[in-house]
Image 1 (cartoon, rainbow, N blue to C red):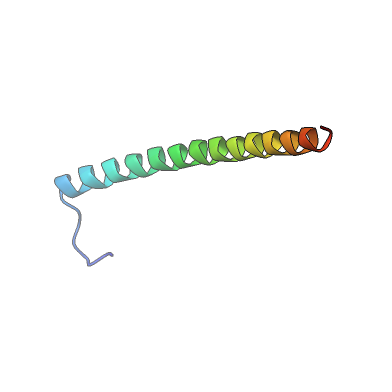
Image 2 (cartoon, rainbow, N blue to C red):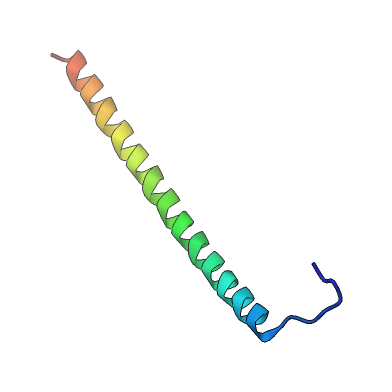
Length: 57
């Protein structure tokens, strides 16, 4: 993207803000991915326990 022109102050500020937002969004994505994986494991465990319990009745 380097067109040979230096960034203006506003462009530098926007770039800094976008980089910070990108970092925050990556952290949020990682947290939500872990939560979703934990939830899926919990649901799987519940379904397996119900299936096992149902076969014994």
